Image 1 (cartoon, rainbow, N blue to C red):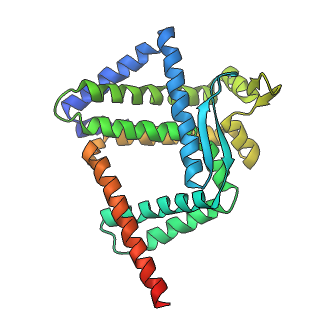
Image 2: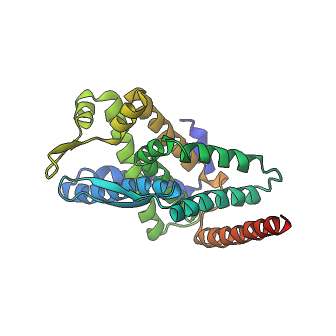
Image 3: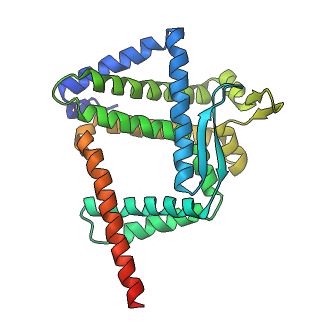
Length: 276
């Protein structure tokens, strides 16, 4: 990767990345910590599935699979109220992004709504829910890194070093997993075999295998797609100062802005209904 990317980081951020990457690497060598990291990784993975499911209107419960190991997210039902909530949340965020980027045109919003509807009314959303287990790990780890590095510009903070460390743990695990799927045939075959479920006397199909079977696309296609996302996330982590600062005030402002945009859209909708 181009060494010039590191010039975008402050000395404190460079030190923080060096410390957390080293800690994540050596922590993997300790069995007692590995168990904790696996549980943490599983939790993030399942939240990735569940959050995507919520956006598409499902009542989804992420959890640990205490009997067979790992985790599992159960899609319970898809009530109308949850569908309205998911659609409203997605569209409100589109309006908020449009507003923050000072874009006068609503074309991007309409494109976003059309793409959402295509996914919503087809089986594509089920594929996305499946993909966003590992995809969610990458996305969530990037957000954590973004937040941590935004607060590590000037001085070292133990709190944000810990956040960055947890992010590096996920990125390292995902990278090692993808590498194994691409270049380690033994681990790949074990993954494809799936996880034996003790009580149900059946085999649980893993995410990439589900995607391959559902689409007919190559197993390697999805592995390379995930690798691209990891590289893209790392690239943006190294140029994090080019992005808006993701401080605690940002999150507070985000929810306030989200509520404000929602009220604005509600007011406009009421006006349109009254005219008719």
